[in-house]
Length: 119
Image (cartoon, rainbow, N blue to C red; front, side, top):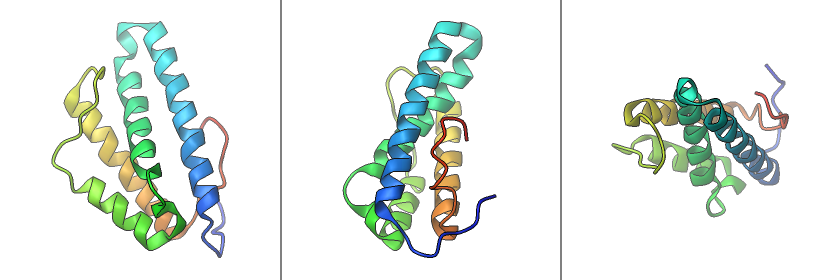
């Protein structure tokens, strides 16, 4: 696990979200090419994309408290919709898992410096 960075950097968080969107789109394309046996990979990547797009809207990433509040609001939703997914329940489960991961990262202010494709 990486060391926490003392000060919150909204630009770094937005960069991390943008990179995760790019990586999840690439993962979705790969899963599509690999066919039916990789539908769960597609749904997982689509969930990460959904979370990063939803979290990246607006300027909430500039303040850790507002960002965490936004993530918790998203987590409190009853259902999540996105066209093109294969299994609604799996997608919703992955969205919730990804939201919990980003909430934890926000609380500890760690992980946003990791910009490589694979996490």
